[in-house]
Image 1 (cartoon, rainbow, N blue to C red):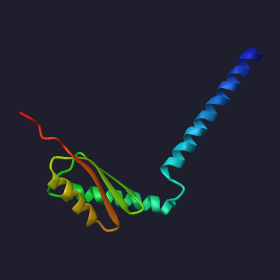
Image 2: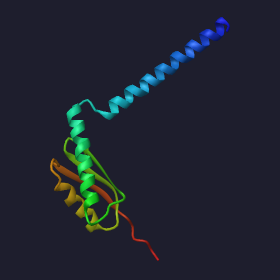
Image 3: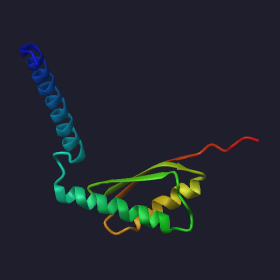
Length: 114
């Protein structure tokens, strides 16, 4: 291997590690915002799982509803077939222990025209 090839390989490897390091740092920052402790992040993951379980156990099924939590505030998003389903999903989420507030952003699907 020539000196020129060795230098180019070193520069390429160094550049790759910088890019990888930046991506890793961004991923860590995005997964745990600075104004939320690790305990709060874990609580939110648990709360999200509990709300999903409550929706799954309900008589009405919500295959297109997504759940996320942040500091006890639960956000419902996705789609429901009717306003009643949307409202009921919010009611189910509100009853889960640890939920402080529900932001029901579920969209009602448009009725299919014959």
